[in-house]
Amino acid sequence: MGIFDKFKDQAKTKDVSDSLEQEANEATGDGHTDAINKAQQQAEQRLGVDDDPDK
Image 1 (tube, rainbow, N blue to C red):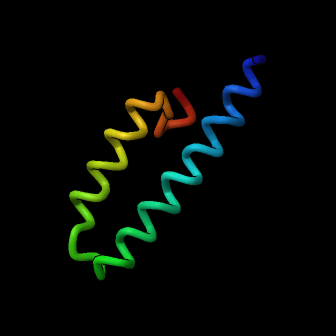
Image 2 (tube, rainbow, N blue to C red):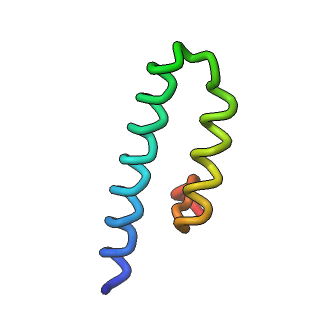
């Protein structure tokens, strides 16, 4: 796996993560936004997805 494949996989994972966060927020009426955001950040950290692409 090349370096570009890794970035491509991270981008896909980030897109899925963002989509799931949005769906969860909509399902809860944005009532648990902070908790959902924290859970998303923890999941991305464990998956090795960089939140800041400039790192």
